[in-house]
Image (cartoon, rainbow, N blue to C red; front, side):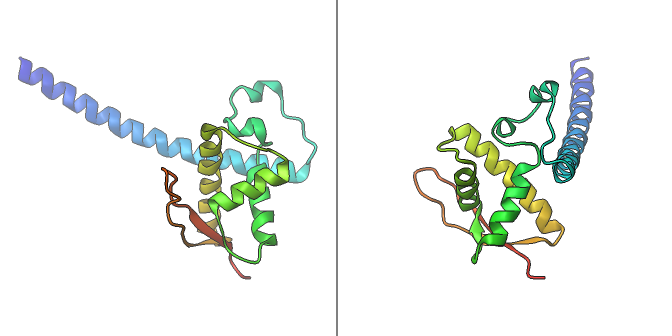
Length: 152
């Protein structure tokens, strides 16, 4: 009886892990689709007012940035740069442009994760390319991907 119960539980665990993987893929697809929709809204109506109801479900970095603003700022910064830039350099320039003096570690990590996701999607579209990686900054700072616009 115990062996049979364990076998059933192992099978149930396997099924739940498979469901979880499927849901994670769908969540990433939805996040990308939401970013695209929000960016399109901002392109069509830069002064668009986001409802207070949306505020509760936005990611931490979206308290600092309008939806779809990070991809637009990153594209502008890469377009204006004469050289390839690391994810960290792009974040620093975005913060300077927005007049944000400092982020918490969690906020910066969230912005970096979102920026990397956006730039990776643009790399898949052939708009930007990964040039390489920086060396880790020491004291626990990770290496960053270096990005450049694709020459057209």
